[in-house]
Length: 479
Image (cartoon, rainbow, N blue to C red):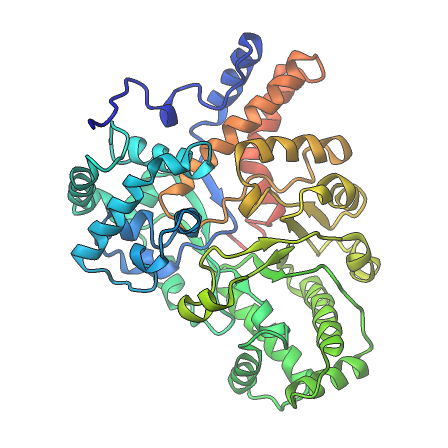
C-alpha cells in the first residue's frame, strides 16, 4: 500500500480549526493573523532544562516523538502495544529498538484519528520536518531515515529548535532538591535568548503520603541546617523557594488528588509533622497535614510572590504494576470528580484577597469549570482559571472551557494558554492550536455583535501573550 500524498496535509491546512461558516471563518482568520507570529510564553511545562543546557542532538525520531510523550505511548498501549515494545524505560535506545518503536507508531497511525495527538504530530512532521506523506507501515523506514538525517543537522539541535519556535519564556518543572545547575548555565549563556525558568514541584515535600516525603524532608533539613521540627521544616521550604526564585522561578506547582486546605494553629501543625515523621500519622492526620501545608504555601507566597498552580483531580499512576515497572508519569492517570469550593474555603478566607497571592486552578473534571472554578475566579482577586489540562487540552474541550467560564469571569481572570507538555516539538503546535481556537471562539462573539473586531483583536492578544505573563507575574522578578 502506497502512502497517501496530499497537497494540503490535514494537519497543516491554512484554515485548520477555524469555523466552517464563511462569515465567522473570515473574522477568525483576521484575528488569528494578528497573533500567529507572537512569541510563545510557556509558564508551565515539563521539558527538562538539561535537554537545552547540554544541547546534544536527538539520537533518533523515537526519542523525540514517542518515549518522552505519554500522550502517544498511552494510546498505543490502549491498543495492545506493550510499553516495552515502544522503548519506554529503556533509554537510551539501540538503533534496532528505536526503529522498531517508530514502525509501531506508523503502523498504528490510524488509531490517532480524531485526537489532538494526531493534530500535533502532523503539525510537527509537516511544519518542522517537511514530511509530506501520511505515516504508515510502508514508509516507516524511509520516514525514520529522513527524520534521523534532519536531527543530525545543527538546525535541529534542541536550542536551535527553541529559537526557531520563537519561545520567549519556557518554564520547566523541577524537584525540590534540584541544584538548578542547568538553569544557571542557560541563564549565563549570552548566545541563548530564551528565558528558561524553573518551577518548584512541591507535593513530594509537603505530603507525608508521598513515597519520597521522608527522604525529601531529611534532605531539606540537612541543606538548611535545621532541627527536625516544623519551624525548621517550614524555613527549609522557604529557603528552597528563595533559591528557585534566584534562578528565575515565578511559580510553584502542587499536584494533588483533591483541593482540601486547612488553616491550622502552629501547635497543631507541629504535632502532625512530628507524628508523620515518626510514621505514626493516621491517613486522616496525613490528609489534614497536607491540607494545612497548602495554606502554609499560600502564606509564604504572601512573602515571596511566587504563584501557586494547583493541579487537582488526577488519580495518578493508576496501574500499580506499570508504576512499579516503569515509574511515574507514564500516562496512566485517571480523572476524578473534583470539588473546589469546600476545599479551598479555609485558604481563600485567609488569603483570597491578598494582592501578593496568585492561585491558578487546573482540573480534569470539566463540570467544575462553570460550577466552581469560574465563580471562585470571578470573586477572589487571587484566583485564576487555569487552561484545559491533560485529557481536556483538545479542541472541543478548549472551546467548551471558553464557553463555560467566560460568562462568569470574562477573559481577564483566565490564565491564557498553558501547554504543560514534555514533548519539545509539540510546544509551537499546541500554542498555534490554542490561538486558532480562541480566534474561532471570538469570531462567534463578533458575528453576533457582542464584541467589535477591535475588542476581539485586543482579547486574542491578551489570551495568546499578555495574560500568561500577567497571571504568572513574568517581569515581577526581573524577567
